[in-house]
Length: 297
Image 1 (tube, rainbow, N blue to C red):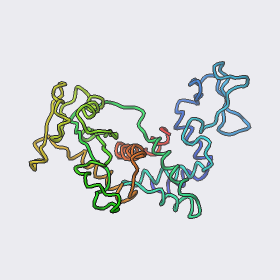
Image 2 (cartoon, rainbow, N blue to C red; image 1 turned 30 degrees about the vertical axis):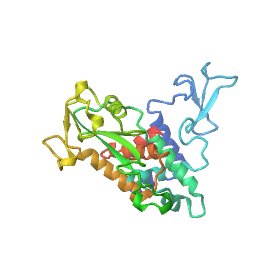
Image 3 (cartoon, rainbow, N blue to C red; image 1 turned 60 degrees about the vertical axis):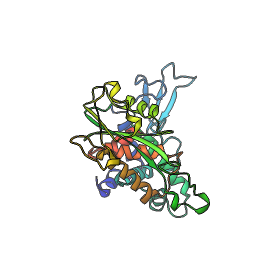
């Protein structure tokens, strides 16, 4: 959808709230408290507001809720149409877009950067995939280190002992060849942590698990999974179907986004950025990526 088509589809608050209701409750309005569609009635005096008269919801009067109740838009003072514009822009930016740029585009120079930053992070939290299916087929697993080089840091912040990824945030990911990617931040790149990730994310019926020569993957074959290794240290990158080029291309997108768009990402909020990049990658061929994102919010 082009930006012109987007603006024509969502010209005002009413159109945005109607789209949110349709995506949130495709089979009919359901009470966010009891989860039942029965005895839910729309108020005639207030648009996009309903009442649930089920006994488990009642505390005297019927439970009243709006279309934004229980979503990331709840109790927001920012117009929903602005939220939609920010989300559309984030999904269109392949390598991400900074909150400073979002502020300049939709909030104005006089507004607080924290407002744009808050809206972006809330949307990233909503991009977390609620449904997960273990990866099958040919799966590539790899780890990455996110953080600046010591030589580029301020002289007073340099640590000569931070070598080989030490001092950086550690991220591990797995990608199904021509399929989806899953990734998460981990505290240590040791064997128990990395194997725990593989057992959780990769199906036992996998055709092949391709990794590099990191010792954390040594016991993959012990669990019955076919394991192929490429030895990057020996200049080996592709051996038949065994390579990690696909997951490394995803790491390239993530790191280009951090360096080129955000410039700095704190370790505390790195999981939210992983949500954003994984969601955008997994739905890159989905014509309704915007609707999928709204449904998850």
